[in-house]
Length: 131
Image (cartoon, rainbow, N blue to C red):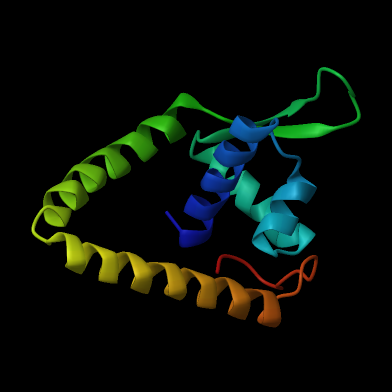
């Protein structure tokens, strides 16, 4: 599975939890992909049985992306053991080390977000396929 596929599944799951399933256009905007790259991505996820397109119940013109149980199982199979392993690893550090690690991760995430915004302004799609 491509990194972009995993990112797309995360976007679809997050959007569904926070307000409703996204449209293909909303997915494209979130991932900074062109329309054609997004279509190829969704086709790939559909073929793998991870998502399906459906018409909105409130606006039949709107297409929505919904995750299948296979995608949820995939996420659980990866993130449950990862979370357990990270929790075990975290206990190896004392309180001061944890604060330092937390501060480093926070500033690293902030730097990544700032750089991404500078390099990829909102709404500017990347061309091509999986990134």
